Image 1 (tube, rainbow, N blue to C red):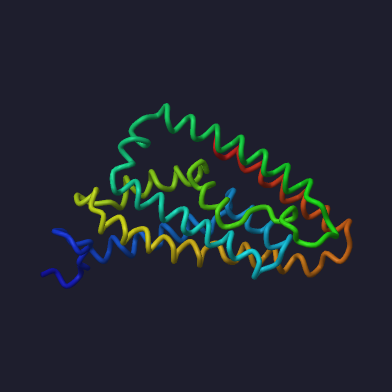
Image 2: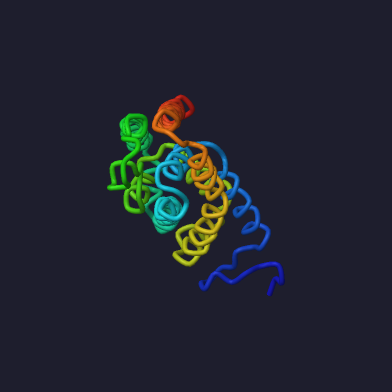
Length: 210
């Protein structure tokens, strides 16, 4: 047995080098700027770190579900059909633009009754499926890191769990950034300026996706 391989609970083994490479890829993909991290920053600024954690977990779990579903066979339905990807991309862009307006126009100086919170757990889980960057990341992961055992549910679960950890570590600083910025927003004008800045950045992120 190759001492540099981990069992994947099936008939194949996943090489340790490939797991570490995928972990690094997942971390970089999660930590770099994009719609998810702008939304997390806006969420941290609106409701703070603790109340923003559900959105962070939504990103991680949503991504993991995508990875698992695609390695289990969904990839052939979506990634092999450019028309489906195109529809998902434009739907995602429309949702991003709508959410950017929601963030920019969010009320300030009121209690967190749900109107101030850009996103929660369920919304972020669902958002991953129409997030163009998420599909770009997933397509790269499939092409570069999945081996001949592609289609193995055990492999899909392994890579999904890695992505959960990487996404939590990579995206947490963005949530912290927003929560930290909130401490300096001592009046409604500062809060409104922050919201407009976050909404503008989120809307601008679509330029990288078209």
